[in-house]
Length: 593
Image (cartoon, rainbow, N blue to C red; front, side):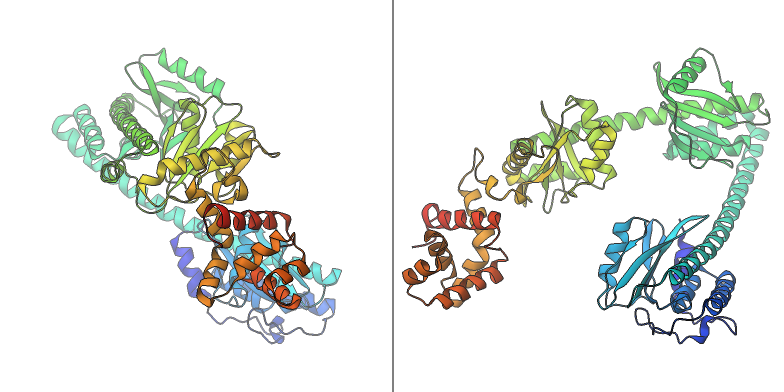
């Protein structure tokens, strides 16, 4: 990942005019992105020489933006190619080069994000061949170079292009490594300065009141500041000079202050973690396990987590143990307080969700939602979740809530006897929550139903029924596992139990709304024409005779119906829904004479 400095350097350098050394690939004219002029195919020896010059220029470039610009400007050195676009991975996102052409920017950007770091084909008008090539080097994935050609490149030209991509990725890895070293050096300097400041503070306190009182005061101040685990580990590292860390009771890292943090942090071994917890719990104070000095964070006998110092050289003395004990006490109070707050908030959020699903007044709902930090204003969706291999208990509800948060769903959560319910402010992604729950539960045997958008608090109970219907339709379909949206059920929306006048109106509006509006504005009869066409069994002659129009006029009207409604009369599903909609409009809703 690049920091803010690398991000700004990339954009500053994107428009910088660079050049290759004399005799390099610059002998080819540089065209605008996506408009590179295709030269005659260069001999292999000359192409290799030009790529070598390009590589040297890239490794001499001051930043990643210049490296990508050189690759895009001199892509013709590798063959009859055009550089349509370039992207750099910045902070977990793909940032387009300012040299990208505007003609295909949106489509190309969407395509490279779909590839998720893999190479893949791209389609660009006027180009026979196109590829999005990942820039991957020793430092990881750095972005994409999107290349096209008017004709399929030869094997030699593909090899030259691959060589250019590898050199570009290697140059990017070097620049990114330099950024990381610079950032690490700055962080180390900051930590040393902070440690020095804390040590000076400690020396002053020891001189006045003694070391133990100073440590106790410092930890009490840290706890009172509300900084949580990070504040405690930062203070403990400053007091002892040793890396300090906090893990939850399952062995997952929550905070680390000091050098030497493993990246990535090792996944916990449940069996070994339980053995460690039991071994430490049997002792009266901190216990050495390997190169760590470990103590438990607990209250009333319940283990909340683990606090440890990394002491590779066995330097810990009685002052270190004292500081570790005070830090553990401060953390126990802090974590207990946070847990109590979380439990109260969870209970309030569930009670609010239950009342919303059952029906409550808007004024009270808005006030309570603000109190728990959820915005009820705007559209909401009701989501119901059911998994065949899981009982719908609090444990499963917590998993659903955690996975929903992980995929970016801001929601209220509660549960019923056989499903979990989410009230979320954004339309859920078609697959994200389902796939996340499938990974967490180890099976895809789950079903999710999503309501249509709900514009008011008063409509939430009705939309809850929609979500249940979407789930029920999915469970009884051939593909029973996955996610179903109520507004995509088509005819099934009005066939289930509880369907009322509102569903009928919504269904008619969805399938005939554009035709009805067109008829109203232009005093036309397209809806009537469609209805008579269905009444005549799709027979052109009978329909034309009934309407007293020419056969060609009928054909024209049916084409206008296709164009305006966007529905295809040749599609069996569309045809059925349109026919039902015309019948409902005519018989149930009285829309046609």
